[in-house]
Amino acid sequence: MNQPTPEIQGENTEQRRDRTIILSDSNEVIYTDFTGNNLQRLSAFAKVSGVRSLALLVENAHNYSLRRWSEKNQRFE
Image 1 (tube, rainbow, N blue to C red):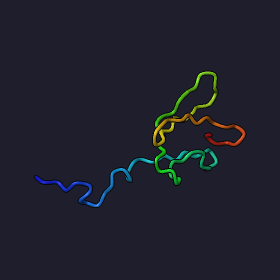
Image 2 (image 1 turned 60 degrees about the vertical axis):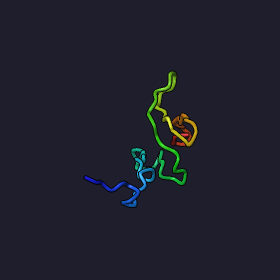
Image 3 (image 1 turned 90 degrees about the horizontal axis):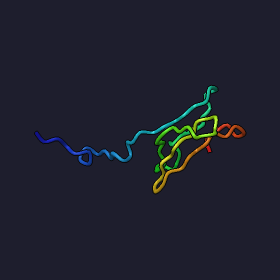
Image 4 (image 1 turned 60 degrees about the horizontal axis):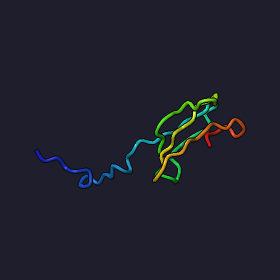
């Protein structure tokens, strides 16, 4: 049986990747990868030794970065 490929159906699987949004208890956005940087993606949550809060491991186009929670700014930076 022949199944149409995503390209034939007009789908681009790269544009359909999972996206993440994290909200605070007061429903404010504290992390999102819906912004203009479509090459950014949340890969994992991390517990960094000596740090009380969790961190985010974020994948970019060519590397990874660790986003730590900023108590002062109330967001991941």
